[in-house]
Image (cartoon, rainbow, N blue to C red):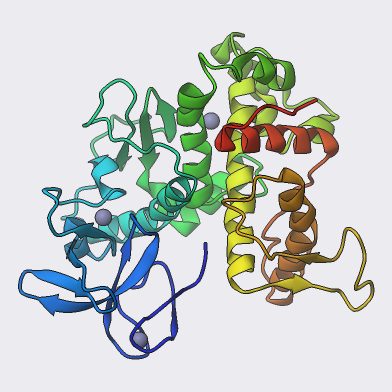
Length: 356
Ligand SMILES: [Zn+2]
Ligand SMILES: [Zn+2]
Ligand SMILES: [Zn+2]
């Protein structure tokens, strides 16, 4: 995610901010231009203080969960990101609002990336067959012994809002023996399943997909049972980004997709900070040094992306350790995993395949 600025006072502002912390001017994100706007009130609308364009705020602004804008002449009451919500939590419970807010932060970051790539984002309300919707549910009212399961099915991404609770999510992480579990990670993974249906199934990418990830027609339930009974193969790290990815070709794809999104979004942040990595011990080292001087969303050269990811992930892990936090990126990208990431890259950019 790039860094934005307040156009009124030039101070940097975060993607999620509603106001500039320095000059207090109202700000909002315009998904059409991918820009943060500084706003002046104009009757029932808001004007962009630089261009004079008229906007209205997304209806979810009232709940403090969305700062996105809609052109004033549009009929829509929800922004591009919020129009994808089909179910939101019951807000009479104040805890739900807090959890939903965490979920929306992550979801908006996901949608931002999809927009930057110009990947079609369409609500199921617009198109029942190929659209996408989100159901954010709590376990309230669910029969005892059952839970709302986070997952994707036919364009519906369901998320249990307990994932937005740090304690509950950490408990789940331990139970599942995972090294990384975040709300944003869930979104990136689940939307990967959705885009498999859209961008790989019934396309020229299907056969190359099967060659690389395996045949997705093998029984999913069988693979799931097998995975939870016997665990991953001993040498899984050679070929998979995570233990979970070993379960089924679909999960391998969704994990690889999610990692490609992690990488590009983090490189985008590095790019917006003009980051050059020249470790004192090896300033020109081919692997440990890097320069993120390109927009990773428009970068079609996969090598440029992955080459810079190694030094960047090493650096952010070191920074995290300095703060007593866990590694931000506790994963190893082997040559085989790199091939899978390259495949995701090729699908996203819709380019001729060069996997092999
Ligand atoms: Zn300001
Ligand atoms: Zn919104
Ligand atoms: Zn999955």
